[in-house]
Image 1 (tube, rainbow, N blue to C red):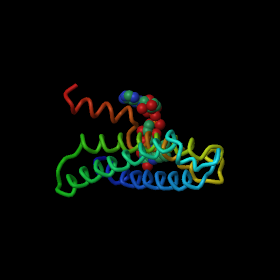
Image 2: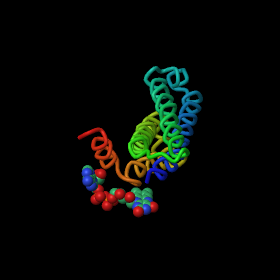
Image 3: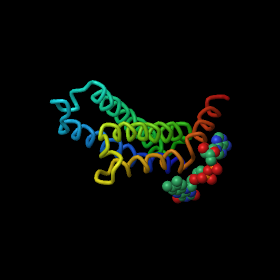
Image 4: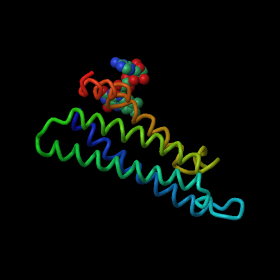
Length: 141
Ligand SMILES: Cc1cc2nc3c(=O)[nH]c(=O)nc-3n(C[C@H](O)[C@H](O)[C@H](O)COP(=O)(O)OP(=O)(O)OC[C@H]3O[C@@H](n4cnc5c(N)ncnc54)[C@H](O)[C@@H]3O)c2cc1C
């Protein structure tokens, strides 16, 4: 499970990057009220949050992979990585749907599928609740 939680969630960290890039591109192209929606701070703040999550998700994946590469145990790190990447991805996908407006809800864009996939990522390989159980136990609770 330590390997699974870093390898699967390396893919989800990549998906987080794709969601960030496609949302930033869309926000730069979509014009409403005479300006790109990216110029609205409430939209650009969502992009900023995605960027922060993406950078931290990568660091979590790299740290856990680095430990596993050296044959070390990484139960705590792999649970933290799994929980952080999947919950960050779900939050980013919800924001991506919001940025895309009605297109985010339709099948014309991949955003609605990405949201469904992101929800699954909080369930498989041990749900977020189970990761929190592991993290609290390994933190002395
Ligand atoms: C897309 C997808 C792919 C999957 N792929 C695989 C696979 O390849 N191999 C495989 O073996 N399984 C796979 N699964 C199954 C997955 O591991 C389980 O769905 C998951 O472990 C949750 O089990 P459950 O669905 O029985 O929900 P339940 O265990 O019934 O959980 C329901 C709710 O109760 C919570 N809960 C349950 N137990 C606890 C607890 N001890 N503490 C706190 N909260 C708890 C859960 O977090 C959840 O919110 C996949 C699931 C999905 C959605």
